[in-house]
Length: 94
Image 1 (spheres, rainbow, N blue to C red):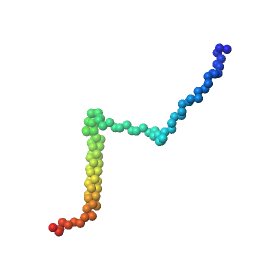
Image 2: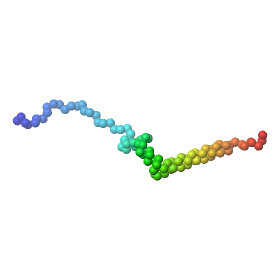
Image 3: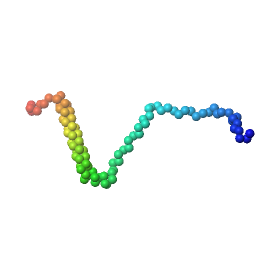
């Protein structure tokens, strides 16, 4: 008779933990990307300077920078023309 489990006579607790709150906004499960380190190892620096692939990447960066500068200059000239068309040119009347 000693090994028989008897039902507990203690009253059940009325205080229970509330359920977990639901998030107010949808949870994005995708973690943010890890930032690329700005300082690389000296070996990769040498590789970028002297390898063919590194030189090609540098040329492409230079070409893209030149293109963006050219587009910015064209946009500035276009904006200047658009602004100046509202004024008369009176250089010949002096």
